[in-house]
Image 1: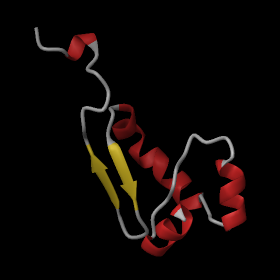
Image 2: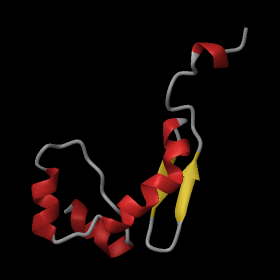
Image 3: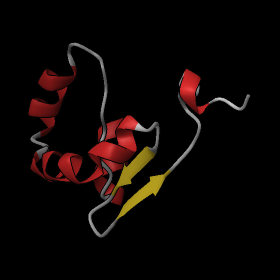
Length: 75
C-alpha cells in the first residue's frame, strides 16, 4: 500500500482524493511536518516547483509545470 511505502521511506503522501483524510487517519499518519514545511516553500510551489519532503530534507525542483505567464513569455 502507498502508505506503507511512504512510511518506510519517510515520505509524505498528498492527494486530492476526498477520502484521503479518512485513509490518513486510519493509518495514524501525522501531517504536522508537512504543514510546517508548506510556508517555507510557498513561493516555490506558487512558481510551479515540485517539492519533495522527507524526514531529513526538503528538495525543491523548479520545473516549468505551469505555462509561463504572458509577461514571462519570450517575445
